Length: 420
Ligand SMILES: [Mg+2]
Image (tube, rainbow, N blue to C red; front, side, top):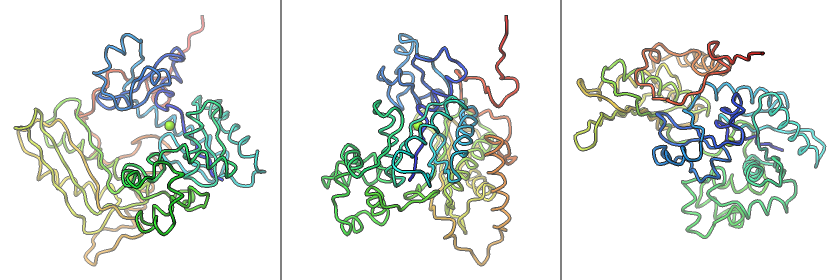
């Protein structure tokens, strides 16, 4: 059995942790540069505030409804996430951190059928007691079904936060009520084709024959089809098709013009993208750097260059060398830059990397070093250790006018409680 533990309204819940006056109030968290809404408390959802909605459209509503607004405090969220995962690791030796606010847990050796559900409630209580973050938990025989179960646990109050799809009947109902686009691994890529074929729910999908699915929706589609029927295809640390490309880009808080400032931003994005690459066990065969100047098109400078790597890599250090080379070609003196980004492409599993005869990079050494860097950052927090290229004056950093203190990671931000 697999349980998917998903933190409810995670960023908004983190902001509430240290500020109980926000309980019962609508809370939103904004993306970099305070641009769009990226997290909403239930009260904010009830006001009709949409995910991804631009903040400027909502200014009046924010004022009228006294919405509490926060800039993204990724250091705080990262640290709270680490604490949640630490609690989860006490309940099973097999925990897979899937994203900042989600983890899969393998549940073994529990007395069926009530055991799983009781255990899940114990886990949810422990996370609430030890960290203070509310979670929804879905339990099912496969990870794809556990995803659907956790979604139900969150959306349908009757479950009280834990949905266990124990019987074939319960699973059938869940599949009939699950739109095909919401199925893990289907997503935006396959959904339009399936809908055109008359498949609108997960249930419709498993009515197709295995041969048909394999022929039209590849081996990945067949795995999803099996998982929906309770046949295990993805163990801990295995997912449906990883991303084909990884992009990290930001609009700068203020325009920057020197090469070193732009490169510092590009290095930061490259390091973030490379860490993502390693987390999914892949390597990239190409890197693209793009920059955008200030102003509107036409007339605005836009530059982009893609470089192919002789050997696919997941090393931040190696990728940075190519990023720098690409930036040197696209950077133009005298421009004021407003945005930059990195896209890693030609992504393959690390195990399939073809070595080159003329390779001069000590790949084992890079790999060991990156493992240490990732382990330190996981323990000590976001960017506790980084390359020199990423550190600097950070003039490009986004504007955050509503940033909360880093309560748990910065001595100067520790809360002070005064006794009368
Ligand atoms: Mg969540």
